[in-house]
Image 1: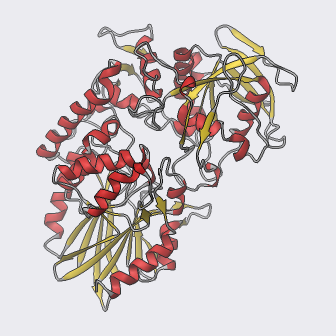
Image 2: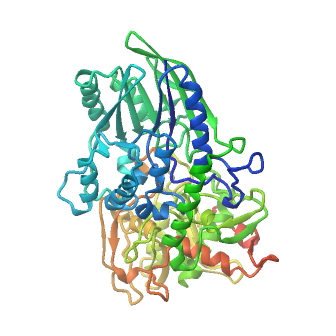
Image 3: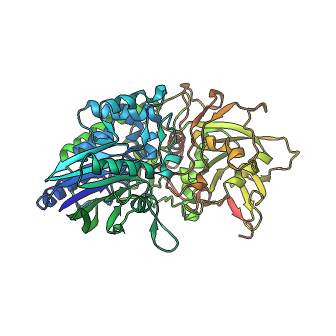
Length: 597
């Protein structure tokens, strides 16, 4: 008998999910936050002690250990995530697509910092090849040489040999934003070779795959996806510990008795899989997800480390722009959700974000896509929203001239015809993730008719805003007026690739104010509509510095900074001088309007 305790897609959520000011891991039953590393550490220790009486216990993770929170903004400098995972007892993890968000050099720096501390899980990367002659891969190559990163690992415990491989799946590899020369081999073919090696050369008793591939529930109610396919294609694999799709599986998915499991996301659950082994075959004896909530008192030592990393991340990532992680920015009296499949409930937050962009850049129009707003705002007990909470709305991307984490804001000029073309693209929904491509705008509204053919559904576009009124935008072929247009670099890299992504159906050329084209480079941007994974709108590449919006300090304005600055500027304050965020008519305004509605 043996037990696997597992997590996945923790995305740097060192602090419990919910308003960060509510999170009190050292006291019980006084907040509604979920997860948090000190609570998870305490739970792992408790379950490890109890299950260890029955046999060996392994603690494993299936990737995307980084990116998504304010602490992740300093992952290159701190390597906090891997250090704390090791302190929690995690023995092995693998790469997810988001672990490459700051490029292979940023990833190598983060792992190197953790390894230098002397505390790091084994990173098992069976189908990730970093051998190319590319300077940005240098740090990862050194980590391979030091065996911090390995193609597989073997753990001997309780008289059993466990062989562990790590795979980044098909979908995740497509959505790796900046691999920078890293190459991802076919996961199934790699799994076949590695499983054979583990069985025949390493003589392991159990083969485990850490798979950043995932599963999703289909229209028939059944879970399907890469992790199930992996078990079907490679019978030598006994167990798949999955990730990528943020799926909380309450029951294992079985292929000839061999399980695939996944624990959701953000350290909100700990998976506990108890297995018996007889005649070389595994059998699931029990499985459950244990919620990581306020009924678990956190590990004090781990929490002290979380507090230390939070302070250091605050100085590294936010101090230069006048912010600190714990700084309150706004107070809310109700949740501001961002559920991609519920466009109406997400409208107030989306309007807030795009209004913030437009004000920061003094642009005619601001734009983003629904799925790039990565979190909502939760009221919790106090309603206070700090820098930590607001950063989670816009954690993705990188800069152009400023390496600080977070996407730079960019600005260009487009004709009315070009505006219509790009907006048509974002009206085409992703059937796997409804609502994630939905256009969110400020400074304009548009009308569309979904009964019309694709790329010809928009019937009218108007420039203006609710308080001052709207006027028509001429999007005829002959119209030459240019409109200033702002978005994040993360979204901009997709927009400049639209002619290719749409196979020529969308034609646009981002311009300077004088109408001359902006020069740009885009590198291997995959069409996200082909994905079944959680990530939307990825891209890698760079644009000329001339489109970077810079502050008075000659630094780029970050996407998250624009939102924070906007919140601070709101005129309505409480007694403590904190901005009061309310869902007024402007927040509730529908700006993408279906004909007849």
